[in-house]
Length: 151
Image (tube, rainbow, N blue to C red; front, side, top):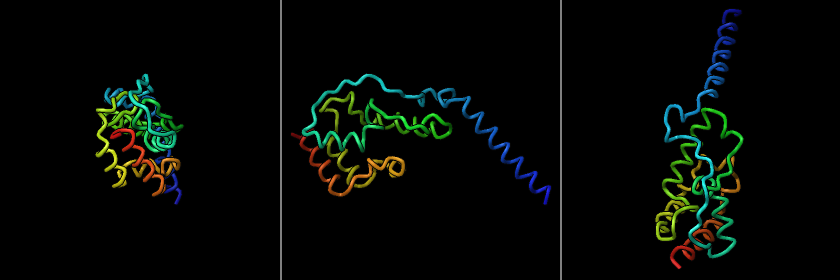
């Protein structure tokens, strides 16, 4: 029984050491494309059709699809930070409300992702309840996106 306890304590100690080592090596050391994205300058190219549309987009989309990301506290703790940075870099590459022009945004694709439940990503929602839109809010968002980008 004592031997088993020593093994468990040794495994816990090893896990703590590995966790601490992770903190010393940001993902950018291994993959520069996954560097901390920060918040580059915003170069807004369009105006939202309403304050409500803007509020819904900011709540559900802006953390990954703009240069106005609100970084969570856990965004600085590896290995979670690696996933956060990857999602933000990928999100901005696919759509960036802060730098893309109105002509670059494919509103039909954007709406399709929202209606299929692909966006916001389900993994994002538990820690960001403001992004978990009701069916009514999603309908308002879709209508606002159409009015902004098709109008």
